[in-house]
Length: 211
Image 1: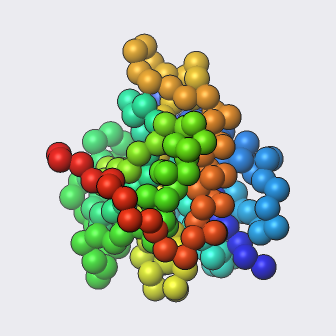
Image 2: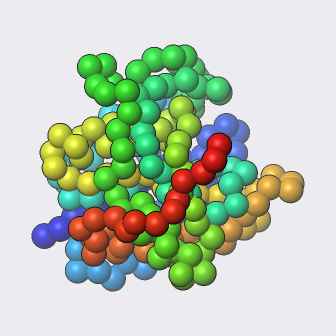
């Protein structure tokens, strides 16, 4: 049976909520596919998230991994393209750790591409009325740390893995920051899962940026 692992994150940085974790729970409640969907909310700590991810991968051996995190300030769903082997924490994680200029994994490449059909996911989300775009970087905090480790695991095991950043949920954003209904975020995650499962390769479409 095909298994999909979908992960979100707990709140961090003093925030009371994290829409990635909320949307993952909602997506799980709405899942109706024949495939097995495993969901989890990871801690926003470098060591804890890595350990939790490794345990989930070992236990469930998923065919697809889609990790999800909050990118406050972004106006829509952003599907990440490249995972960097770099940890450079602008703020401490929830354990108080703030590593600077360290690798996510030693003896690993400098970067790994997502193995999800990133452009197809963006196209399908937009077609469903959800604002979405392609992003080249997932930052250098815990989101990218999880993305990189999952991407390396997928490359080594012949599976697929990637990362989706989401905006604030409606009513959660600080003043003047964009937001999106958590129900739409969850809908986008379900689209990402289905598009990945139904696509053997990505579409050829413009998705790059000038800067």
